[in-house]
Length: 268
Ligand SMILES: Nc1ncnc2c1ncn2[C@@H]1O[C@H](COP(=O)(O)OP(=O)(O)OP(=O)(O)O)[C@@H](O)[C@H]1O
Ligand SMILES: [Mg+2]
Image 1 (cartoon, rainbow, N blue to C red):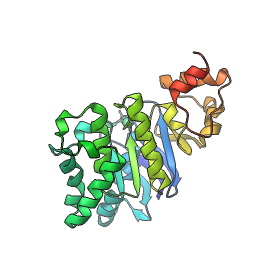
Image 2 (cartoon, protein in one colour):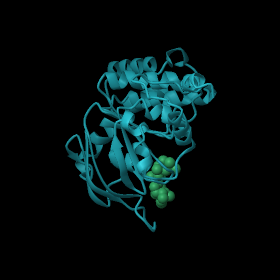
Image 3 (cartoon, rainbow, N blue to C red):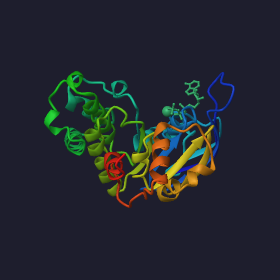
Image 4 (tube, protein in one colour):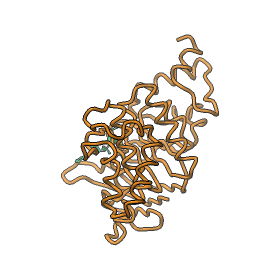
């Protein structure tokens, strides 16, 4: 799905590259958690992955297409949807269903196809009952699901989520993650940027960024089993919680745990 070789990206005027020599192969259907300290280059790498940014050096292939080839841009951006942290930046219409329809309309799809896509995206994100509401009246979590619905209506092959669960309450997060599980189960490639370790543990592969490079790449079980202690970066607070849990005998289960359950089982 993605093949990056020697990818470097420097923002103009910056003293150091934001992404500094990344080699990464991602197969179709993978579910990856991209983690790392603030400023380690995660968002920049996501933008390179959907050709929003072109590498300063190196190459990024998306489904075999060179992301620096202008003729491939439209297909790449259509195939790889990016959902940002702040849903306000992505909501364009005043009514929920109109907002979801915006992307497919821009693709100039036939009305029947637009309607079908809107139905599917609303159903997947649990927004069907809110379809006629004003987008401004939605809660933060509903807006985040609306941003996801808008991306899903493009029927992408891969979804890049840049801290897209940050505004959800625990219940909203659980249903959002269940939705991701369904999408991945149906073959969609997921790259989820997150600082939340209870989300990272749901992925099938963890990629850790440090200072623009891939510092570690492997399965969650190995990661939480102590691998992550071998390299160092300024860790987000959730890492400290996981370290504490591991020291008390927590074994990452095969099925996704909920942070509340882990805390309850350890009587913290
Ligand atoms: N538009 C920009 N112009 C200049 N420098 C930028 C820009 N966006 C990001 N940077 C710099 O590039 C580096 C990597 O930033 P990036 O946003 O990719 O990191 P990140 O891992 O997503 O961080 P966070 O966890 O805070 O979202 C940082 O040093 C950041 O300051
Ligand atoms: Mg970021």
